[in-house]
Image 1 (spheres, rainbow, N blue to C red):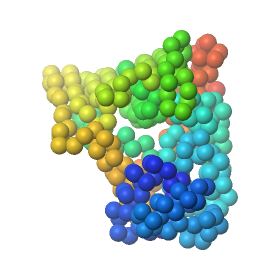
Image 2: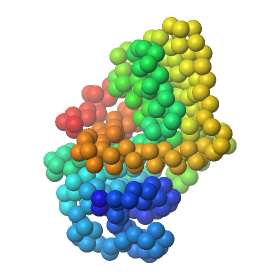
Image 3: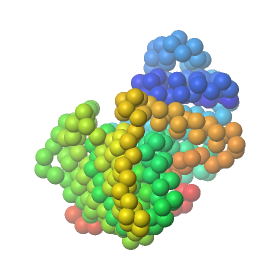
Image 4: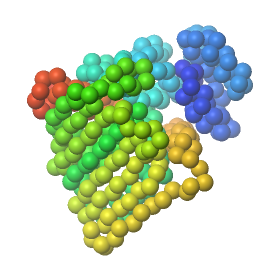
Length: 333
């Protein structure tokens, strides 16, 4: 299986290329705007490096992993779509011109146009959202079904901006589509990587069938502790999980049970974080081999941007926002 890699930065080198090379039937071709960087990665892993997109697509890749920084992802993907690849596998967030801590309304419209362009060209788009592949996330999904916990009724979320888009994706996955949101930006600002001073964000929302929720985004939480916490209440119980595959607890109202699931302490949370990329890649490649839909479709990336765009609009205009009216995702599938 021929796979293309666009963007050979740290995440490609540390997480994706090793995960892909575990598969004996995979052959990699790498391209980057910075040729020296791509060649260094090529030498390290013994994979092919090309100098142009024309040469890149001569290899006829089954899929292209778009692993550029989020600030460059829009332009990089537009360039790729000119060649009408079979599939694209996108890092998160789908588009973020000013970085993942500063997603804007414009990013939503750019992301929507990108997916429309891909759809019109017959290009299948998938997202990574590797937090869906944590052991605890997968366990939570199973327990909700096995214990018949029913529909979500409330959500409480705290997230460092480093896990912000992932946390939003998990909220949408477990609770359903966003219906209305009202948000504010705090007066206190904190530094976040190269985004500069970023204020705390807080929002209340209606989601799913009739669930209510809150989310607080910040860069003030310590990296030595869980970077996010998520409590989801259901008709028949609630689940609380947090961090990079750390402890999870479930309260089952029907059976009057309180259980705590502790991950193995043999590896660190960062080991589990890296393993989530392996699981995400494995699931995606399996979908290609079986000619099946991707495990996380491109629309998931647009729905995450919709949440952020509606939140930003609510802050700017100081009133609740209905995302289906202000930021409709149709006609994207």
